[in-house]
Image (cartoon, rainbow, N blue to C red; front, side, top):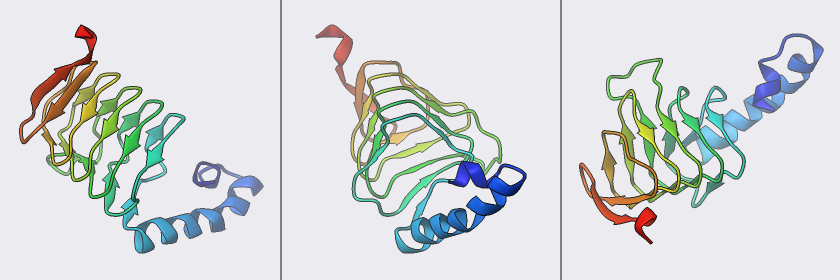
Length: 140
């Protein structure tokens, strides 16, 4: 509905109240901030939807799962960032992905509490602050 509210004309005007309701429910009740400008593929799963912030400039692929207290944003508070997250990515509770040009590949698992400040190649499991590679899924 929030996508429709950005359209001009009658359809956009009809969808606008639903957009406001969506913002009120998500931001004020669940503390989840995912702007309508965020591009998200199919299959989004939000486990324990509380205290999640995703920057509006982030592009997320299909089958993305995210858990509570997670932030995906800009390091310098920039309005325009080019962070891209691939398909089949899972982000653990309390993880922070912060930076302006980060690319996270496909089939990546980011552990709980992990701080990501640089790009991650596909098929990896990463954990820790500044992250270390725990498992390379491509070697299986």
